[in-house]
Amino acid sequence: MAEIINLRQVRKAKARAGADAKAEANRIAFGQPKKAKTLQQRRKSLEIERHEGHRLDRREPDPDSAE
Image 1: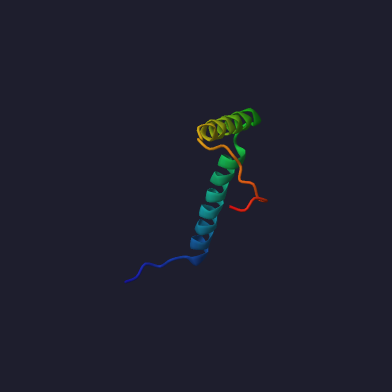
Image 2: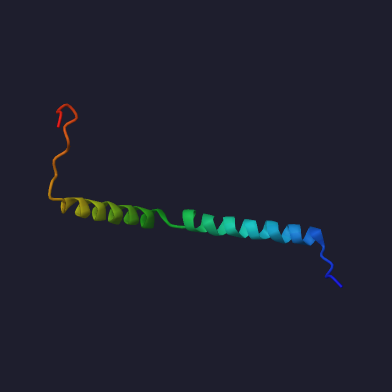
C-alpha cells in the first residue's frame, strides 16, 4: 500500500526550504560589516593592479589609426 502524503505539509516544507535558501544567500550578501567589504574591495583592486602591471605591452590601441 502507498504512503499517504499530506499535500499541505509538503507545500509548507517546500516553502520553508526556499525561504531558508534565500536567507542563507542574504546572510552571505549582507552579513559582512562595511570594514570587511572595503578591505576585500581594496585587496581585489590591488590584485588587479598588480596583475595588469606585469603586462609587457601597455600601449592602448589608437582607434583613429588604421592598422
